[in-house]
Image 1: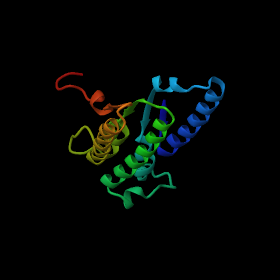
Image 2: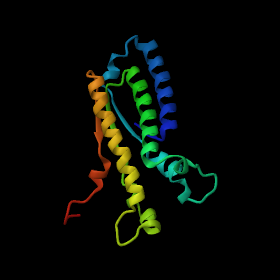
Image 3: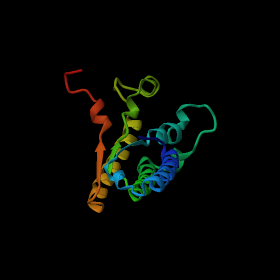
Image 4: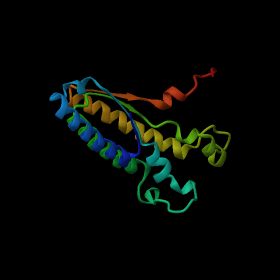
Length: 168
């Protein structure tokens, strides 16, 4: 499972490449890699510890939210995501599950400090999450068309976590 931000995902791809190289020297065949299922869950740290780092007031914050709109920042992340997924594909990855962002604006810390007017979630965070997830879903659809021998699956973590109307 690959998890973290876009930079640690790149490091994990490099490590995976090294591992694949060692296996191929031993087995002389890496076709089994196309049967592996890769689970990728990145993006949350890019928002929490970068784009929205101003909320933590711990110093050393990034200024991404001053430089980019939520739309532009999501686009930058998706471009990086595409490059890293292409590298994973080139290493033999053919079955990839990609998790969208969870409900950033609904975490207890955010609701306590930035919730308002009785809303259960803060809109500014939810807008960023929606924008990223929409672009990720579009990326997944495009990859499936571009790479017909692979299967990329978008997992909408937000819809999994939402409760149904009138139910827990």
